[in-house]
Length: 303
Image (cartoon, rainbow, N blue to C red; front, top):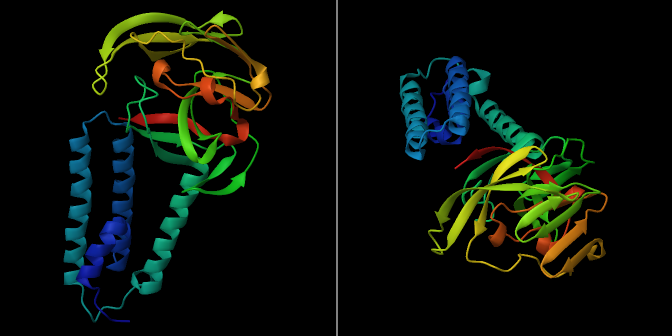
């Protein structure tokens, strides 16, 4: 086959995935170079503390530079030159299919990005932050709302982990909270203090913080739970104890008295709290998280 690559199609393929455009114009080596560059750029975007405009500029340079390069390579191709198999329609379609399968496999079984949907995990997770969630070992495999495989949890879960899980009242909705109670633990919340197995999670004041949306005054504290230290936010103006009514499944495992909530976590379930303690709907209000609702553990945060 001796047809010349179409310049407009080469540019279009760049916005699907630049290495595929390079295959289309018959340049396998350039495809490998752009693939390595894409992986390097992805790693940089995830771990670099650079400001968003820097990452946006780098992404723009990659895509626009790749599109110009693909256009130039397509323009200089000679129609008399035989096309390699990977540059023909079936080679390009096969490459796109491989890309889709690889992407779905990674998202379903290994790592999936989520957005922090609310203020409930401040100050640890700002609303809108990108969260990379490790899924392997947590047994709830699938992506884009489709669940393909469910297996028992094999990964180690520890108090203090930040989990993404399916909301017990609506499994189509994902919540992000901190794990504070394992099966068999006694979890008590009173006077804005957390106790696990009658041991207090020690709090130490760090700073005052103003909520830009509500103009409310908050106080950031560090909290230490079984050797894990993290930050929490308490609303200084809110005096109610932050305990809900016992109208959730297995509520008989809990007692509530004068603003004190105490629960024995049932087998196969977990107790979670938001770090923004006075502005979080969590296990205090809707109960325990079943093990098979866990999607994975947050391993990387990109504000």
